[in-house]
Length: 219
Image (cartoon, rainbow, N blue to C red; front, top):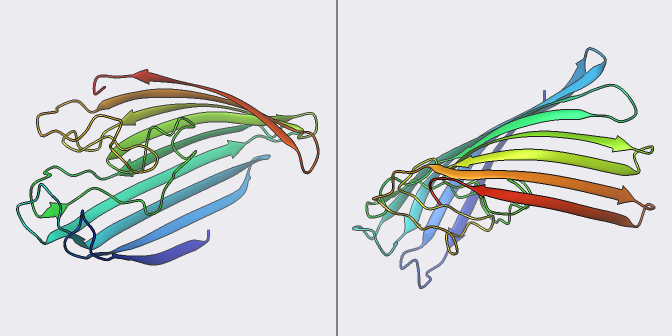
């Protein structure tokens, strides 16, 4: 059960959007393991990061010194059945904190650091690890002596805080619905992902996918 402990420090100089310097730290822990369970293989991963520091000035804030207080959580669990097909059933839960007040001196939106996130939260890149609460169920397997890989997954997305924005895989709210103190909806939608990959040889792969997003009340 290997355990990782980490601290990441991010500092940005003066910019048009941040009149004061942005400097914050992300401290966290991650544990993961894979071991025999019956005749198959059970694996899991869990991670918990916390962020603190200075955000710098943001346009809507009443204070020029905005502090960061944010956190996130992620957990994955999967079981691989015995056999040449290596059929795996998996599930995961992800949470990234959101901001409940865009005009105060505290930013609570988790910053997942240097995205893009593709394809961690669905292949359509509609979701980031920011202001999100999402769960996923998936099944995958191999055919023709591992020449063909197939995957099917289902995602459910919600906002962690309805007053914050919906962020895409690059961490931007642009193009989607922005933050609103009047919003009371949290259900963003569901996504279905299908993927097929064929290994022609060690240097050439063919891949095809189909995804569909079903809007919910927030959209």
